[in-house]
Each structure stands twice: as structure tokens, then as C-alpha cells.
Amino acid sequence: PRTWLMPGTASSGGAAVTSLLAGAWVDRLRGVAAVNATRRMAMLLNGVSFFVAIDGQAPTRFRLTDTPSIVTYVNSVEDWVIENRSPQDHMFHLHQVHFAVIEINGVAQSADNIQFLDGVYLPAWDGISTTYPSVKLRMSFSGVATGVFAYHCNMAEHEDRGMMAKIQVLSAPPAPPLPLLVPLSPVGGDSPCQRVPVGNHVQEPTHQYSSGGLLDVRLNYRSGSGPDGNPQHCYIGQDGIQSPTLHVRPGDRMRIALSNQMVIPDGDSASNYITNLHFHGTFLSPLPGQDFAVTVVAPGDTYVYDFTIPADHPPGFFWYHPHSHGTVNMAMLAGASGLFVVEGLEQERPDIAGLPIRTIAIRDQEPDPSVNAPFKFLDVSVNWVPVLFPDYTPAVLAMEPNATELWKVINAGADANYHLQLLYDGIPQPFDVIALDGVAMGAVPASEPRPTSFFSAWWTAGGVPCPWSWGWSQRCSTCHSCC
Image (cartoon, rainbow, N blue to C red; front, top):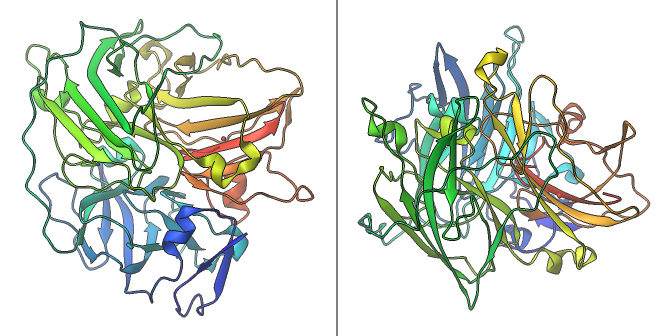
């Protein structure tokens, strides 16, 4: 186990907190100063509008032109108490910063349960209790770049309906002006967003790796229609492959030219077809040209993301997706997402070196309209293999007997959360969790029991809720990302 020195407060008493963490992220937060601010906020619902509101500020539905609701400074340390005062579940997500969940429903978490995450689940308020479901998060802005970035409910429909706000991190000099859109030639010809038949074998996605310290990528944002008439969106790389998995190392330069090649139907508005990119779970700068999630790339425009992965960026499994406010839910339900890897995890967990790796993206999608499904996100795909409501015919994943594999699993969808298990003859199988939300965990002694599921068991046990990515390794067998 590694130790993170928590700031001295009434709740922590300044005690050292032992956590199942490893590597650079812990070192980045070691020895932080006292807590500089404690903020309280609530997740609210009013009719069809959703809000995330700071106590003392009027709840407002988010607009891209809003000024930041929170202003803080580099190297500050803050506690955020977040309550869910609505009758729906929410997943709170903060860009650029990971946080520790130090309290759940007012109960301090033991040292063994503390883990750094970029998203945390808050169950719905029952409408009766005098207290609301809540979490208390502790975060350090040490090493965080200056700029304006977002926090929001990570269920894309809730975010589209207003449950989002901005935070600004200040330090001299001020942020540079926005870059101009760079005109580039489109990559190749048109290419549809391909899907595969129900019951198919799960195939490994196409991987693109940096070379000589550079990963230079062109992505065309395109759309088509499925057999059921639902829209299909995707990022097409220069080789014609959709949503390539991008691999870099700390210190690499990454350049992505994102070209919006959407065609606006007659009578429709261009505002329904805007896009951009957010590199979910990473610690990149929110400045223009980097993880700049509040820019707009209109149909016919191209925007260039050009940045260097910080030399101290922790290795991990992340993802990219559109964050164009008002269109996120539709785009992600249509399949607009891809995977992003910062290499080096085996250096922090040598026990996984050399293991065969499976990369698995789970995406929700809209069911066939003729099925009359009660929710939009009840259809699922596993690496584009559909698993459809109500039959849920499984996708097929073949393994060698007695093999040990590293599975990198990511929830790359819009609205659905998943309780994940690996079943053999109906029996849940144990596994080792290697990393959560891009943060490596320390090895668990062989004598300790292994988990057999993710999500609901963690919450009901009073521990850390299921993150948005995760991964695992297991014999004969990696939550936004997990390894």
C-alpha cells in the first residue's frame, strides 16, 4: 500500500491515509497543504431541466456562454460536498482532476476504501428521507493547468438538459486567445459507421501508436443510419477504420485534426450537428487546442488538437468522445466514442507485464423503435457487437483454457451504468482489479479475497462506487475505465 498525507481537517484529523494506490498520481498529491475551501452543491431536477447548483447560487440550466460557477487557483485543495436532491440517479464527473471520496452519506470512508476517481455515482433521493444521498470529495489542484473546464452529470441526457457547469483555475499569465479553425483537406472518401451482427465474436479494435514521440491522427466525424433507422455516428481515421484506439506515452506530442463531415438535412439546424472532443479521465490542460471541451466544430469545419502528454501523466486507460453541449446524448447513443491509452501501466504493476490484453468498449444505444423499450439506452454493444433488448443475445468472447488475461474495459456510452460480472456456468468468477479511472491500484496479497462484481455491491457495502472506467486480470479470465 501507498500513503497519501491528507490535509488536516476536522474530518481527517491530519492523519495519514493508507490507500490501495500506486505510482505517479499518489506522488502528485503527496504532502498537500491545508484545505483552502469547502463547497456544497446539489444535483436538481425541475420538469425537463436538470441543474448542478452551488449553494447560494440560483439553479440555472447550463449554457455554453455561462461564466464559471467556481473560481479557484493552482495548488489549492478543496472539499466538495455534493447532494442528489432529485428522484433520478446521477454520475458526477469532473474534468482534468481526480478526487478522493472521503465521505458517503456523511460517513467517513476507511483508509482501505479511498481511491482516486474522475466520476462518482449518487443514487436517487427517495422523496421521503430528510437527508439526501451525498458524497464528500477531496481534490488537489496541484499540477493542474489553468483554464476553464467542466463538471457535470456524466449521464449524457442529463448533461444535455442542463446539469453542467464551469470551473476556472487561475494563475498568471492569463490563458491565450482561442485559436482559429485550421482548414485541412478531408481524409479519403465517405465511409459509413459499420456495425456487426448480433451474436458475433468480439473483435479487438484497431490500435494506433505514437512513433518517434508523435501521434498524428486525422478523424472524420461522420454519420449514417442503422437498419432500424436510428442514427449511427463515428470517428473515421485516415485508414478508414472507425474509432481507432490511440496509444501514447508520457512526453509524446499528439496532434488530432478533427473534421466535422456531417451533412445537414434540409430544413434542419446546423446546431444539431456540431461536435468537438473531450479526452475523458486524462489530466490534460483545458486550454484551447488541448482538452478544450467548450469549443464548437461546426459541419464543414476542422479543428486541430495539438498538445504534449505531460511527462508525469499517470499511465491509464481513458476514452475520447464529443462534448458539444446539447448534442452529446444523441451523438454518444449513436456510437461517437473511442479509446485512449497512456502507456506504462506495467511499470507500476509489474505483475501484468506480458499478459495478453483485451480492449473492450461497452456502449449503450437506442433500441429499435418497434420494440417500444421504456428507456433509450437499453440496447448495448460490445466492441460494436449488438446485445439487444429484450433478448440480450450475448456477444461471444473466446478464451484459451487456464489462460490469464488483462481485460481493459471501459463504459464508453451515454447514459447506462453497468453491474459487471464474469459468469461461468452461472457462477460469478473472481478477478484482480489493476486500475480504476486510469489510476493504478496496489497489488492485493494472494491471501485476500477477490471481488466477483462491480458497481452495486461496492455502493451497498459503503465503499467507493463503481468508477466510469476499469480493468481486471483473471485466470481463465480491466469501470469508466478498468484494468
